[in-house]
Image 1 (cartoon, rainbow, N blue to C red):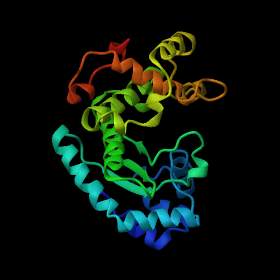
Image 2 (image 1 turned 90 degrees about the vertical axis):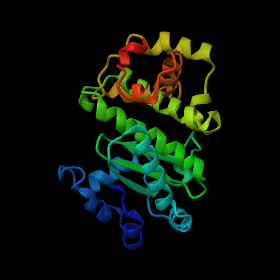
Image 3 (image 1 turned 30 degrees about the vertical axis):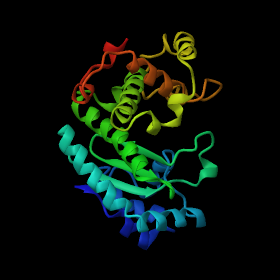
Image 4 (image 1 turned 180 degrees about the vertical axis):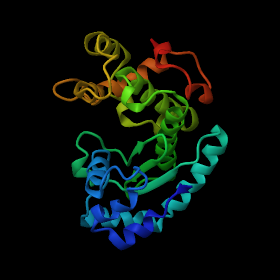
Amino acid sequence: MGVISTDEWLKKDFDRPVQMMEKLKGAFRNTLDGDVIYQHLMKHGMYSPTQRTKLTWEHLRDNDAWKKTQALFMAYKKLWGGPDVPIYIFPLMSSGMRKKTNEMKSGLAFEDKLFLFYDKDIDDKEMEAVLIHEYHHVCRLHHLEKEQKEFTLLDTMVMEGLAERTVERYLGAKYLARWTKLYQEDKLQEFWSKHIEGQHSIKRTEPLHDILLRGQKGYPHMLGYCCGFYLVGKSEKISVKKSFIIQSEEFL
């Protein structure tokens, strides 16, 4: 499988993303229609058609983003013995909509598929960083015998932390997501005690899960992500393959 030719989809239907998403119904076992898929992907960085995002698409096409991502995927799949999944690449939403982050990339991982969203100025190492992060999620979801709806806040935090620590392992601190550098360690300890400690077992299906994870409604920005990165950083150095199977509770 690997990288799907979404560059061809974009060539034909750039201005009709909902229609384009109909092609993904099979990937979602035909349980969702194109509009629902598009709305879901937009929450994670999917473009909406503008002059700027059209330039992004053209830039990515001219820069061989699809070919480069395929080469990276094949390398990490072999290195980690990971599953073969389809990868869908689309332009990233325009910067005005990204609010507090100024990332060149975003992604969304499932056990059986992967979405990557690239900005036009993304360099090859940034592409590698987001692929490592999101494919790490795929591998961990593949190995954990737990349905995603059963995930707790702790599970999600550990998953995000481990994925980003794996980016650091291969590419160094320079390519960590900007949210990893938002707070000092003592601040994160304080946040953990104040906001997370009594709440880390709430299920992913509860509204508070995403509020705490992203730091919304008055909570510190990217709260759960940052605490997860801090939490797994305190563990002993575990191998990448062990990081796919280690239980979240072990980090407590």
